[in-house]
Every structure is written in C-alpha cells, then in structure tokens.
Image (cartoon, rainbow, N blue to C red; front, side, top):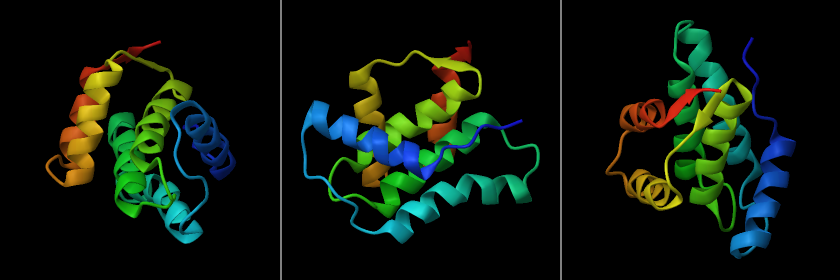
Length: 127
C-alpha cells in the first residue's frame, strides 16, 4: 500500500525548512499546492504499474512548477520527493549539493520528470 504525502505534512515541513534555511513564509496559491499533491495519485490511477520513483518525481516536479509557496519551492519539492520515497521503504543517498543542482535544473526546465525519476532511482535503495 502506498503512503501518500499529506498537505499538513508539506506545510509543517515547509515551516521547518524556512526556519533552517530562511526565506519568506506563506502559501502563494493553495490550489496549486493541492494540485501538486494530487498529481501522483492521478498518475497512479492511469498507470497502475508506475514506479515509486515516478511518483516521487511527480511530487517534485509538481511542487517546483506549481510554485505554491512564496519562497522555498525547490527545497520543499526535493524534500517531499525524498520523504515520499522514505515513507515507502527507501533510503536516499545523494548529497545536498547534487540535489540542489538537480532541482535547480528541474526548475529551469532543463531536466524532465523522467530524468528526475531516473535520478531518484539511482540515488535510492531499499531501507
């Protein structure tokens, strides 16, 4: 059974990240946050054999592209993609520096969702 990310978890995690790294607080668009969190479930309904890495990438891309927060969208996108994998039985191994570069590329549009899923797969292992 897949463990999904709850909106409350995203909001609490975002607050922790802002406290640690700085930035302006607040939600820019709640509907865009809800949309980003619904997308992985939507994908699963059309692709029942989709991988956890594809679902994690869906969370990551959705949060980066929808830009639901005033600040910290790339940080929360990375954190939620990894958290999704962790609560579903994986550990993640990429460095913070590499992860920042990957999510910068994702935000700039130079990395696809498929490439993100592959990167997640390459940097995760069963816990």
